[in-house]
Length: 181
Image (cartoon, rainbow, N blue to C red):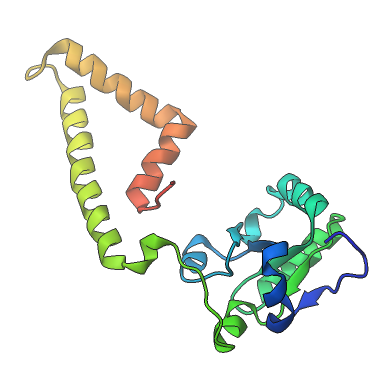
């Protein structure tokens, strides 16, 4: 936060009227974040806080920061970690659990509003995707069915997939069902 007189923790009642003026970071996992988070919060898991330090410092220059989690434990750890690095933030006491218990709304991404829709989309993606590696591996194996050009093209695709960090990440996200968007 921007001043040293700012409290190191804010209760739900203290934070609620200030949500519009705070930069809020939820330090839970993406799945936990998707289950419900403070309005306007961005997700930066606790184990990635060090990597997000430049952006956190920029946000601190613009205004006060609040970190939250489910119970307040991880957000307090994040607050201490950031304090050690010279960034003052407040932790939400009791986390989203306390906010929900007080009867306040939590935001949820649209994809989590209907898990059945998300599941169906994943099934379609999996079915469509499963055809691609099967065909590519088949074509890369021999050129009797599709010719040497198709074999070379398939092997090139596989080489790119397994040597490019970006392609490997996209492949892993697709296989695990993580939506990078």
